[in-house]
Amino acid sequence: MANIKSAIKRVKTSNASNAQNATVKSAMRTAVKKYEAAVSNNDSNAKELLSTAVKHVDKAAQKGIIHKNAADRTKARLMKKLNAATA
Figure 1 (spheres, helix red, strand yellow):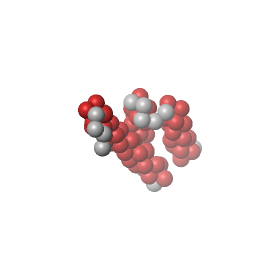
Figure 2 (cartoon, helix red, strand yellow):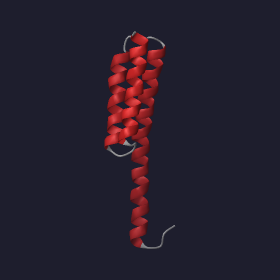
Figure 3 (tube, helix red, strand yellow):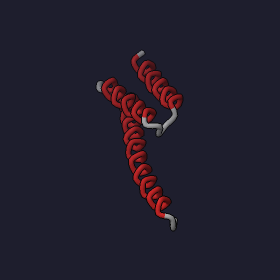
Figure 4 (cartoon, rainbow, N blue to C red):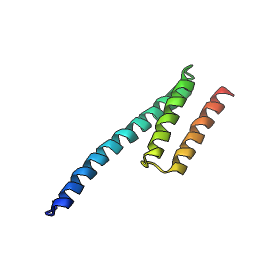
């Protein structure tokens, strides 16, 4: 553990940030998994789940949790799955 006061504060804030980032990333992964399950089961609400998943991915990219290009790639793959399922 750090001895310097500013280092102790930094550890606290980084732990709080890590917890918040983990929450956002987990929500993103859950939304993507729900969407992929809906697409594989040919559910009718796949489009709504797609918009939710895209929203979570965009939010994670906006907060810097995932890279912008990784978010774009993920969204492209999700769109591709829906187009393949409907075609």
